[in-house]
Image (tube, rainbow, N blue to C red; front, top):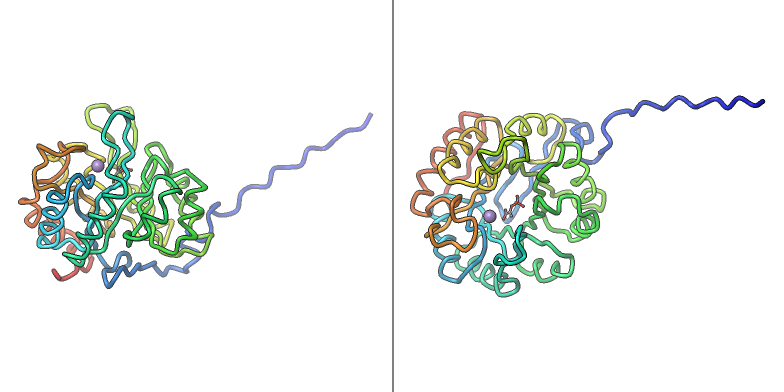
Length: 290
Ligand code: PEP
Ligand code: MN
């Protein structure tokens, strides 16, 4: 009778991601330069704007308000990942055209989401940063294409993704030679149902230990309600976030999507002043208003 010896499983050595690991850069942090706006390292950056591009007036009003309030980049989705297929899905290419106009008027770089690789070329016409939404964090073909697109990428943490899974998603982009990757904590699913998601503030410090990539926080989608957004933003800044991405609308009560969580554009400047004060206390450099 032959006795087959089972090989001992080799214990894993180090993290499964490599390029995303802090060890890879020997303690040096990635700083992404988007038209002179810096994200990562000593800098604190703010990305603000409406949830979705819903009309020319709303977008331009929001864009001017967030610029005047001190944001560095403008956000707005032309392609929206909606839970219901019957909800507004975004203006698509018309939305991209409006984002181009907002960029031309304000000079602000644009952050916008791509959901489908078939829209990537059109999105690349206007996006300075491509957003990969939480629901697509593990869309590996899309991640690979973003790695080849040669444009900075903002990866949002999946609704139930571990930090390692988030870093593995970043690894897909980095592996293709795109070094400009930033991560975003946007709230995760927990057993708690009293609010929309649970903002995982500990992810900030732990990610910054594990990776050299910038770590942003989205308080809007985490909370799902406006009243919690300022305090969560202050907490994120205090915890060492490299920036925030926050939803702002000139008239949120009439917004087509995510109305209850969007800040009033009129409140934005005061809000950001407070967040930046805390970021400075946490040791960050905030950009001078342009
Ligand atoms: C968004 O930022 O517009 C968005 C839909 O966020 P998330 O993918 O985090 O839900
Ligand atoms: Mn939204």
